[in-house]
Length: 181
Image (tube, rainbow, N blue to C red; front, side):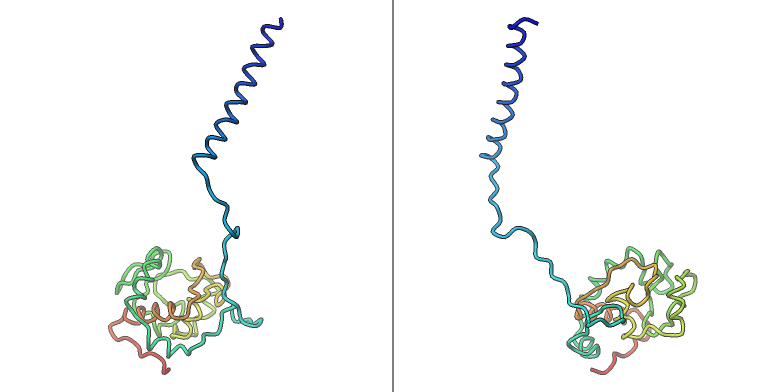
């Protein structure tokens, strides 16, 4: 290889490097992003109870009866849209990934006809879906029933759960009364 060929190759490499560095500088001038004052995101985590074995839920500041008394079923219906991926709310509706939720309040747990419940859920079949049990389950499904098929992470805000429970109460021909405040 003669020196002229070497000079052409070296010039091409140096020209390409100059072009890449020049375009990078031009990009920094055009698309300038200021650095945040404090890097990262603040993630708020609700404090859990003091080592209780009840599924790690927090104790509500108000009683469930008080929360339900001021609950808004319309807000609960809006929240229930997330549930539509796995459940239906129609009388006599079909089971999907989860059972039909019509007339859920005071229905025996793991007793909806035609749905294959997990063994852990069946272990609660002697209980009913009272407002208290629903509140506990909706706050942390895997905390109440560790091997439930329900993959939903739960609703942590007390009033949001109360709104959803108030909506679930309306899904009945004869809605059950709320517990006393």
